[in-house]
Image (cartoon, rainbow, N blue to C red; front, side, top):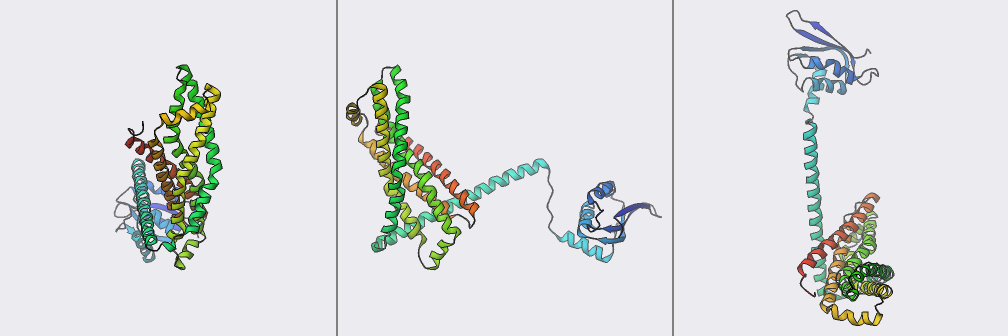
Length: 372
């Protein structure tokens, strides 16, 4: 077959006609529809020009689509076609078309489409999170009526994994943070001769704010990510579907023990972390400012009111509950592939830490006049 060609003839009654000939198909290797489109561009713009395709040996969808786009997706009396060609053009015209828009409009549309996708994803997360809270509430009501079904073994296992195994890292990090804070503040307090006030600053900062925040960040990175990964792996391996097939509640056996276990152990972790942070600060204050251990321990209860410890424990309960709920929420949303597992685990940690900081800021504003 010959390559795709065309010629322009003058008609006897006036006007011109474009005669197409050869093989207008991708099967002909020498055909280059991009070049043909450029060569025909000026003819496509002429609304009085006639087109004759009766000499075309073969016309495939690529050639027909190029011609149809040049004609503005219109077939009228100016086009002389064979019956099979007319059927092919009719089929192409029946297909849905993508509307072309300018580059600036495309960017604006993409921007708003991106915002819409974010809104939909956020609404989806909120709906699923509320559904998780509702399922937990129903399971708790069920356990109140049937206390013999409380999963004590699962709860104790989560207390051990989320609390006991976290004691070394939380204690070490708290101790080092206390030393760093005490050294930094000692350098400033010494300039003004206010060495004794290091007890006030360390006591309030660690017991009221730093202890709960430090615990929540460490637990989110350690236990929260482990919970998301565990539930996510069960989603990938279809173990959760197997539990549903056997009539076992995934909320009762998987989610509830994690929520209860980590929420109960969070205040103990905060107390443990705060004690080690105070010990580090006390050691640094002794080495840097010469403040004795007995004076530090005797002066601390006088400057830090007991209500601050209560606020710290309340924060611990909220943070432990929030970190666990976020971890379980993203674990249940894992899709059956490894990429979703890794991204959900990372997102779980980031969202949990961000949520903890936001809640702490709101709590600090609401209790700004308490215990100071």
